[in-house]
Length: 58
Image (tube, rainbow, N blue to C red; front, side, top):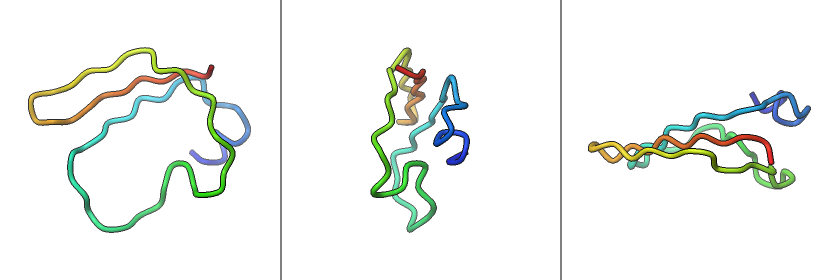
């Protein structure tokens, strides 16, 4: 996914954000990378606290 983002090959991202912290892991956007130019197109908040965020390239 990171390589596709870096090459500008991603048109749309659907991210689901869960309200808990679970240790460490790979980041979608690593520290030190150039800021992604994204635009929030749609969002949903579910009863369990999960957020659905739909982004497209700006």
